[in-house]
Length: 253
Ligand code: PXP
Image: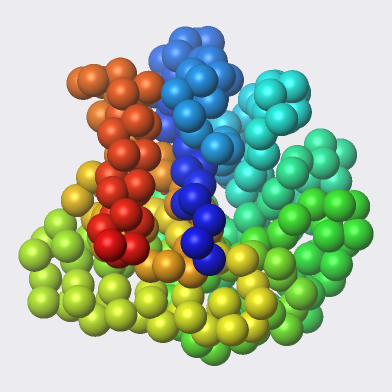
């Protein structure tokens, strides 16, 4: 705690736009270079089973440019043999285990570590054995935090999607969902885990999330890539960075 909150930029949706035309433009690797130049602390990319956005060759290039710049690549992956083999051959700095269903539009909920405990424990051990820092993307649920810890994860990433959606819909549930995130962060910290958060974060929701003192990193994608259409990727990241810093400074004051 007390360290600067890192911002990881997820560039998946640059690839979504590229793939809509089946051509090579816009290039998510160029977006990653721009994000790092604009102050992103790391790059996140999700190689989905159906390859709907990021491709394996994108991962090849992202590994190279992040290593060259000394910044982490966070490789989001489903718990499958195929993704494990790809992670082990590319050796990204970090891997984030996420649930994946073919028909979902985006990662809809957290990983159920209680249900998949044996398989997830084994995957974490193999990835960690290769020097990859492993995180688990989970809902803000104390039992899932405990399961991530006992499965050997070094990091948990708390799913902020439900909270962010509640804020956008002006739902009375927003407050309770924020409290759940705070409680999960406290519990994960008590267990010695590093804590990240992400999904659905925009300029409005970033401040309450960033103010949670145990958080070390936010991973933000869709909103930043959308905002880049209007103001450019660098300025969008810099504004998000500024809001994160302001949330932390306000909390400390
Ligand atoms: N973190 C994880 C684990 C994710 O799966 C995603 C979405 O790919 C994000 C963060 C970023 O979410 P968003 O694109 O909504 O900002």
